[in-house]
Length: 420
Image 1 (tube, rainbow, N blue to C red):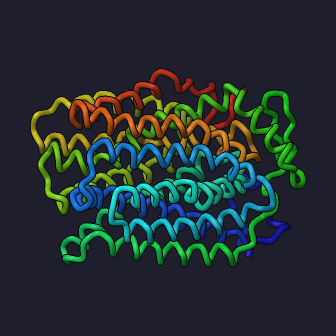
Image 2: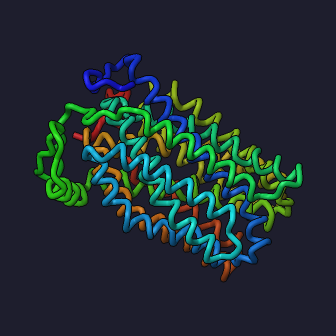
Image 3: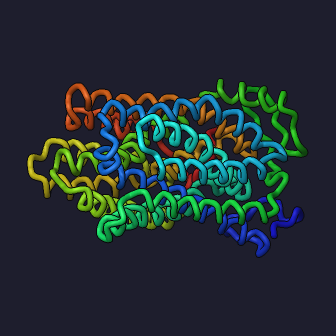
């Protein structure tokens, strides 16, 4: 169990006290579960669409509206996450995620499915995002490196998701059973979280944002937390990384969400083949995330993102222009690999911009997340008007934004640190 005496800064050699191992492992399992659930959604989407008769516009709403709902709810949850309520929020979020998965598995219409997704998004914020925030608070100064490990755990989940759905199709079980199985796994992880002792305060570093001193000592009132969040919302340094994180998601989660439909509607794959192709994408992502861990120990994260964004622009444009299905598949795999370090580096920079206030960082991220919801919905709307091939061009804005607006690393910095 995590002991209060162990809530201290970790050294650059990343030596974790034995008492914290179980808590760290639990957080990584929660991320594995989250990405497993997300890719099961994507892999099953072609069959869900056919069974429930969904249009492209409804699919866009399915991805976009829950993000907007989450934007209204998550900021409050994230701010409360900087109080002694963090553990209760994580456990409550896990229970809500479990309920949402049960609702998806039993959904018989678009409104029921939309309700389940609208519940799942903010619930995942409480369950998964606050787990990530706690892990980052436990490791100040190594946010990028810890985010790389977090992302690797998620990649293992994304690899397992399509395989799970493809196995269900092969055995004639359909898609609903996978969501019921995920609900059982989510409940088990929630029970494990309820047995853990979370640190009351895991960082001794104060944060200075917009002229407001946010002390990490002791618990803060909601009024103080709200004032800190308002100051953070006016911080160009923090907002830059959060907006870039949203833009990067165009070729991360949003691409994964639409990839199965691209495989079936544009390339001509069957639902089972689309699930297997999505598995190949996840293998590519896993390889990329595994490579990132040693790379970040030697190369500045910002340099990695700038270089990978430039490569991705070329690969993704070639993917959309290529007329041959096999070439499209190969390029899709290469695109997924080329997004090396995007999420880990950008999220780590956001945490480093406001050390010791991870809940506040994620509250601001939730507000800016409205941009992500609009982008996800826009892709579906454009697909309903002009077709999916035309809509996929919108995703190119992601790597273009990173190539243009991620600043060059400061000379001599080998790990990510907040801007001076």
